[in-house]
Length: 461
Ligand code: GAP
Image 1 (cartoon, rainbow, N blue to C red):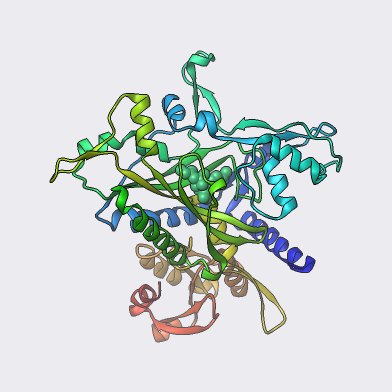
Image 2 (image 1 turned 180 degrees about the vertical axis):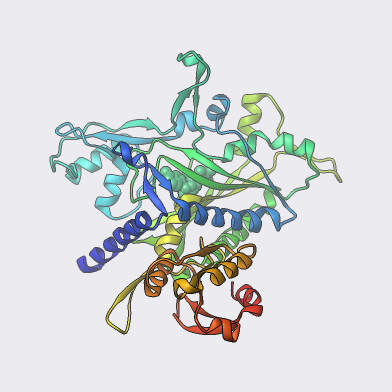
């Protein structure tokens, strides 16, 4: 990629971030106190967009399927869960300090950025030796004065109860997945399920990332949407392939461009401690390709581990053959907040218009647009009628009413927040019982009779 192309892509990211703040999608966290590094708050439109994506995910994968169940487990869990899952021993990144300026980096990421390739499976010593061989300096002070990497566990620690001693120490969950495994027996005992079946849940996860960044791409507090799909071992491969396909279909249903996504297989050395087969669905962000979703074949690792650590047998009995065995798991794991970023970046366009002007447009799919229909009076004189019309549409669509400023400015504002349709009640509307409907992407306008307006919009949304 040329330097000019890189600069252009960077500026896309800057434009999206500035639009997000200006239009109430995402604000910097705790801003009036000077902020808290890499924390973000979702404003009214951002919160709605996130919820719309989540609702579509829940409907697609939980509500509309007969083989899926939903769950909502606690963020705080018995710390033994994280010993069993391997997170206490293995969930660590190689932290390196610059001895000259105290800058902290992730050794593997420093190496990856320098070599422009994914590296995995290197020991801390190997990372250090490669960094020194390649003479990779500190990005801040440009000196080559690194400490040896230390394994830095990413789990946030906190304390339950009034005593701040190690007996009361617990973790904020680093993934939602384990809540599903520890409820496996509850689900078998309380629900009528037969293999294959899956359990999905969404919610906050926390990781004390060494290098968070790229806006809401990598944060220390984020939201996931995860599914553990339980199968007979011999079903795993075909189920895995199906999940890759279903996941891609979900992203395209969100309106994300297909040619900006790719499926990347993890090499053997890159696999997590629990997985024998993993693919990432990646998106080409303005800062490069990045993981949007991971799909992992976890075998029976988690159910075996929790059986070992808890003493509870996490097994399945086939109701027809009475065969008892430990199911295997295929896990599609999405990042909700990362999907929000993808949708924002993918939908954004700085469009050059014929009259020499430019407009910012968010080409959101109407299903997930925070506002679907905006209603305006052309002038203040039509306010009463326009507002009455707005009230009739509100029960059917996510609607907004706006009568402030020039009509052109109102259109531009709705383009920036990605509203697919603007409806204007004008001086002719009393006479012909019709309004002007303006479509966001084409900017085409057409007259539509008020009596069929709701049906007209429903057919388009
Ligand atoms: N249970 C498996 C698991 O958690 P993961 O690949 O570590 O797998 C799944 O996480 C998804 O969660 C990622 O594909 C990404 O979308 C999202 N994610 C992970 N860490 C994140 C972070 N620090 N900030 C935002 N999203 C993150």
